[in-house]
Length: 353
Image 1: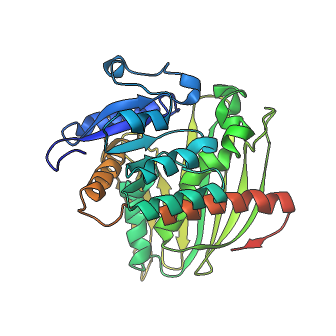
Image 2: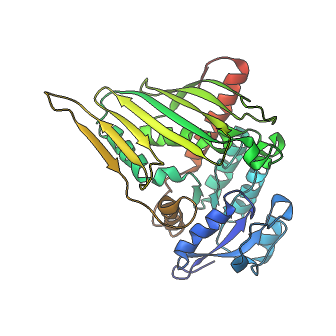
């Protein structure tokens, strides 16, 4: 294992994951603290996206071979949902710290296996839910915690992105055997996780309609809508899918309370996100404000929030914090909600949790 002063040795499992290169670029921001030391390609051994600077690193065909032959401290796991539980269990039992690309697991039974293995091993665990480190997301969280919204009424989230044809219907993300689910597992999971984080509340019931709304023929859902009830009685709606016929994305939130309402545009040009805040009008002067988060030019997947996520993980590895902002419990909660959204739609009923 690395000493407290030398960089942690990090193995990367799943070279050609869609975000694999982004994660590796992100690690380059913290080379004095953590460095890639070995690779397990996964994805049928494909290394098409492997950067030349990493081409001489030791490569192993399996996690078992990696553990048997390589000295390393931790692993970034970026494999398909079908393999994630087995890979993470094997690493945890070997005492390796784990950063797992979202959604970490594709179904509740696998998320439970992962939680049990990681918790028993006591290793540092982090997931790829970077929005928990976003400036605007944390300002919204603080607004709710400080009761600046008054009584929380509703959260409306939209997440539409490039259609199935951008990657092609044969991509593993649309393969039910590899991924188990589609849009809600791979992308809507971000907003389901973030809803619980920002609100500080659990989701108590689910109503949904998911399916295939475009002309692409795939085995998993390409999108849909979910109505999610929160502890406080507030209601959240999420709509989105692989619905845009180009490489593009449309993301926005509106949070409404009895005392203020806020529109969040995470993609506003020349910012790292923008909050349009509408507040009370006690007399003739209304509270109106726009907060633009400063531009973030950090290279790599997720930019500044991605680096903050990595540093949180390293802090837990050093014993400086007890847990990362993402935990096995928060991971399990989100996977369970995704499963419940699919089930509620299939059965045409509201499901209480």
